[in-house]
Length: 344
Ligand code: DOR
Ligand code: ZN
Image (cartoon, rainbow, N blue to C red):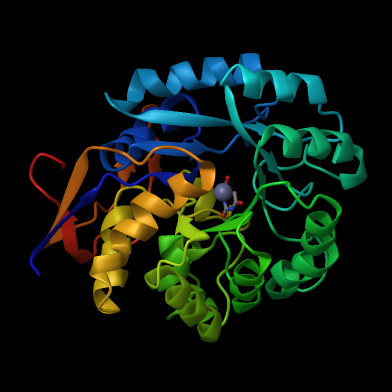
């Protein structure tokens, strides 16, 4: 197959940032995806419907036509349940995002005591509003934090709220794959392109590779292979979420480099590569364009996107207004797939 046309996919987990970075990053996502679940970890985070509405307008102003950003509410210990429920009813908030405090970039205002959100979770379950979780505890070995989160936080949460819809974001382990499979439908999971391509050794290939560092950090090879199997089988609870997370080069190539991989410039091309490598191009559409919409109870997109097997180079860097630069995942590499004419 030298070309594939699929229903336009959605990116169910992306960081678009704000200001000049938003202007540089958003068009890459909007060119490929119909909708995107936009993460709220701005500084300060998006915690009110008013802030989300204004942020959505800023995204639309730079994204280009036909793109529908879905907004999320950053959960803090102080979150007002009425505000969230009203924001959902008004169609401003699509979901709530739970970051354990200090788990990752711009998460200091996150949750320190999950019990404070139990009333909110009860109401979210009643109205069918999904909870998106950054699934890592904040203590112990960094490579074990996702597995620990399942046992200490996620399993008890699902048990306490048996009808709450939850998305386990950017899963990185076989433990997570198995857990999602066994959860029976109301637990979904996003899988990034980079976690399908990197293992933990990739971060140290010939030296330290800051542009391959993200959170949750890539794990052992056996975990990467388990993620690949789940994705390319297009099992219903697993769907596309890039976690594209741009940081200026100066923030990445630093004594204390930020977590985040900017995959938006090649994300769909990279998923296509993975499905091709696994002989599963016929299931790319399910994973990229159908499973997520089904999970969220939204219609699938009616237009299509074409990918062509015809090498294209990923830019070395993307300039940001004001002088900074951001380096994409796979910068400078020639990838086997590119967006087709009209889609690029
Ligand atoms: O690597 C990451 N970067 N993981 C996250 O959870 C947050 C993200 C960011 O905002 O940079
Ligand atoms: Zn993220």
